Every structure is written in structure tokens, then in C-alpha cells.
Image (cartoon, rainbow, N blue to C red):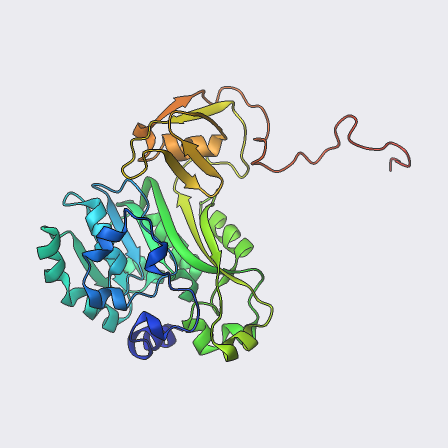
Length: 347
């Protein structure tokens, strides 16, 4: 699979227009604050972009960021502007042709940005332990439509958990399927290269993340993907694919369900480019200056991370009120008046 991916992205694809699906994002879908950053990136780097989402989370000034499967470096050079001269972005990729493009335009970006805060490493995302990267040394790890290409996703998540600092996050976009992908699709070289063959069933991804200590995966955004090639569409049949962005926090104390401790937060409106609301995930849009009730996990994701200084916090963990309404699973037991006693029996 490594050879297949290296050939597909190193030789067969010359620019994003060669793709046969709608996985690659249109620049028009990007937020306005990000577009000026992309305008400062070299055109050849932009033309060889094969990502499926946006991996530029807010509040990165001064952070150390690792980009897994960085390709020709588009996201690295965008993130370099967000972390600033006090931060660093490291890109890892296994395709020499892609890294050659990224490295060739480093002087251009140093001159454009006014500082040099990026480096690129040749390596495999399943073997991060073989690279010169210190454990717990990255505030944020990102990846853009790459994890699906890995034949050993367990090893990838294990490496990410090892490299993230406490309170850090893995913020990434990837392709998921609405069911487990059959072997015929998995083994098709074009479908694999197009990020469909290696896509995980979304529920299997959540289980994988939990196995590696990411207890509460948060979905940020998603969109359906179209297989635009007629022959490939016939091959995938009723399978449905989605591009989705998740954020996974490395935090102690997260629980497997959203528990209610009577807590709330107030967003101060101070995160750059987000004066009116802060979006933690698809289900948590927190308006500025408004008291916003949260579960214990959401509290920790804001209180024990780089976001803490931008919120006021109400409550603690001294009293538990059960599952967080509208967020946790429903209580499995019948409540008084919720069931019909007629015809019931005991064993």
C-alpha cells in the first residue's frame, strides 16, 4: 500500500484537477480569515494540494504543530503563518516528489513571511517513533486526508498519543464510510489512492480512537463526497463517503459519556478571528458573553487546554446530576409513568 500511495501521489497525480472524486476542497469554501494566508503560498504548492478539509484550528500563536502526510506543504505554510515566528511547524511525508516541491519553495516562503519556522521530514506516519521527535512535544497535530491511506491506523494513533503534549489536540480531516468498506473496494488501487478504499467505517474510527486514549472524539464539520468518475461510481455501489473533521484532545479524566456536573462556561470573544462565537465542534457553538451549560468533558476541553484564558468557568466537579441532557445517552431504565404495566411480567 505504501508503494501504491507513493506512486499515485508522486507520479500519477500532477495537480488536484487529476482527482476523480470531490474530496479536494474548493478554496471558495474556506473562511475569509484563512484566504489571505493561502494567497501568500507559492502557486505550485497550492496546485499539488490533495486534502479533504481545513486543518487550521484557532489559537495557534506560538504553538508547535506537526502535520502528518504534509505532501507539498500547503497546510504547513498556512500553519506557519498562524503559529508565527515563535512557533514551529514540522511536516512529515513518505513521498519524495511531494517533499521536493515543499523544500524547493522554502526560500520563497521565508522571504514572504519574514521568518523560517518550518521543517520537513521524510518518514512514515506509522513509524513516528523512528523520527527525531520528542515525546509530548507538540501542542497540536494535524492531518489532511491521509490517515485513510495508512495500512496501520492503530500505529498512527499510537504515535500521535505519544507525541502530543498533555492538553494538546489532534485536529484532522479525513474520509469515512457509512459502512465497512468491502474487500473489492479496499483492494482497488485507484479507489485506494482516491482516499476511498482505505476509509474507515465512522463507528470503527470512534472505537479506534478510544483504544488509544482519545475517549471523546468531537466532530467539527462534515460533507458528503461524490465519486465523479462513472466507472468508479459503479464500483462503489451503495457505499456513501464523507469528508469529516474531528478534534481529539489528550486529556486525563474524560468520560465515555457526557456527564452533568451543573457546569457552564462564558466565552469572552477573545480568540482571534472569532469575536462573536467560538465553535468547539458541530454541536457546541458558544456565543460571546452568553452563559453556556456544558458537560464535564466539554468543560475539560476548554479549561485544561490552550483555550482556558478565553473563557470564564462556572461550577466544578463536586456534584453529579447524571447524564448531560441532549448530549449523553438516554437512561436505559423505564421511569415512572413512561411504560405500560399491562402485559408486563417478571422472570
